[in-house]
Image 1: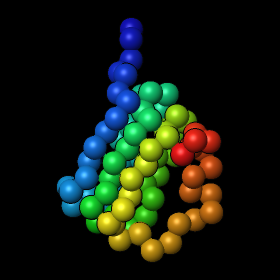
Image 2 (image 1 turned 120 degrees about the vertical axis):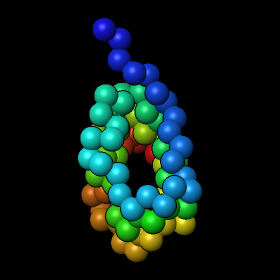
Image 3 (image 1 turned 180 degrees about the vertical axis):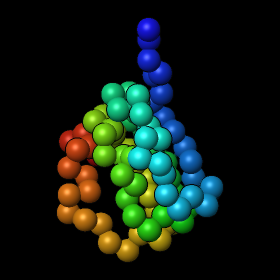
Length: 79
């Protein structure tokens, strides 16, 4: 079986407060671009932690006030 090969997800302007931990399950190798700007998130979503090839992450215009030092450790070095 071939898995899903999604490289880009745009979820901006959706009033999201959080994303389920398993929202990107099966996409950890292919997903490179995630746009979550203009939502209502207060934390960096845990669902992003397994995206090894993430190169572009947009979180502007959310309600995030603090970013833990370990928040981006698992991401691609090009992030």
